[in-house]
Length: 191
Image (cartoon, rainbow, N blue to C red; front, side, top):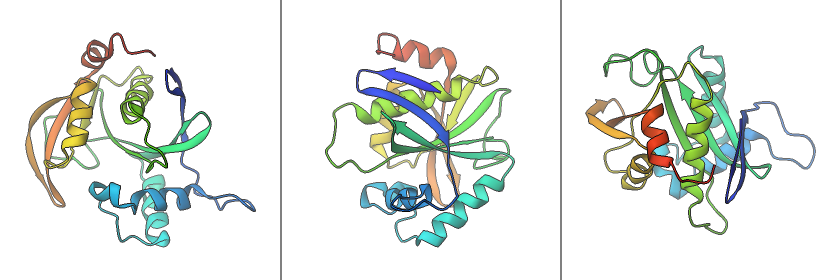
């Protein structure tokens, strides 16, 4: 999936768990740096070691209902995206599923120099990647109730809060966004 935005080109590729070549960084090393950064506190992996991150993403890669991707901005790794079946992972038994539901997590790499609108462009690219699958009718997310920044981003791309739910690791807001809600919220955004 490729998405052209005013801030550049966004693409998504599967997370590669193989070791890096000489002079390169592996996806696991990148993701470890991202999830342990203080700005990523809601990812709940702040104290994770490289081996912990590798083990977690090997578990995701082996799961039949969960996938992880590296998002690229102009060809360089810039964000992490996870796609999951919410009836099997994260939200199993916690909400009223509908046909065509897909769950999503995303994490923007900590910026060297912040770029205004970058995270909004990333979530737009993530949603476009999910809706590129014609089977997907609705995206379901479960952000921490205290994560105001992501709640604002979710609202900006069309998510609506359904209700608060209790998960083992957090109090969360169950939010959904249909294809139509996403299109209505982002009409006028440069695509």
